[in-house]
Amino acid sequence: MTTRIVDSADVADSASIGEGSSIWHLAQVREDAVLGAGCVVGRGAYVGTGVRLGDHCKIQNYALVYEPAELGHGVFVGPAAVLTNDTFPRAVNPDGSLKAADDWDAVGVTVREGASIGARAVCVAPVTVGAWATVAAGAVVTKDVAPHALVVGVPARQVGWVGHAGRPLEPTGTPGRWRCTQTGDTYVESDGTLRRADVEEETS
Image (tube, rainbow, N blue to C red; front, side, top):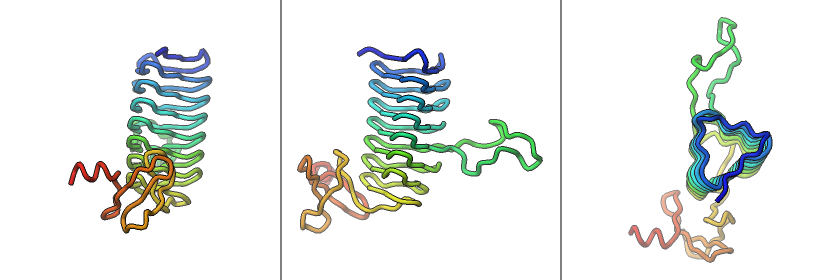
């Protein structure tokens, strides 16, 4: 696989770009960022200092991923989505002096394997988006999102479950059991969490 970095992209010398990754026009990848294999960073996107991406992540056009975010394998960040890093943002200190990097403590967003952040969604750090969850377009996430949860709105709230294919799951008619209409996989809900049925059986 060939790694592709277009001429107009700004990639720090200390950034680590995985094999087969593509960094597109006007994107910026800051110092010490780590991208896994097969990642795509779209036009105008920003990947902050020290941010870590797993393999096969997609950071779509103009998305902003601020340090110290950590993304697992196969994470999707939609166009113009923002992963923040400042709980109490201010441009200046109480004395009126301009804030510098050592005047605040950066906090990050963690996005687990396979999860998706929709277009123009905002994840307000510190939060964790669980594996295979979906944050709908335009949502504002202010608290942790459970694995496989589908969250929408401002602030984001859970309205359902999604499977590995990203499609909303449908009830099977048996309490606590859900099915993906695309793959046919069955999922089991227990105590507010969801697992694919074959995983549930292997661990029970």
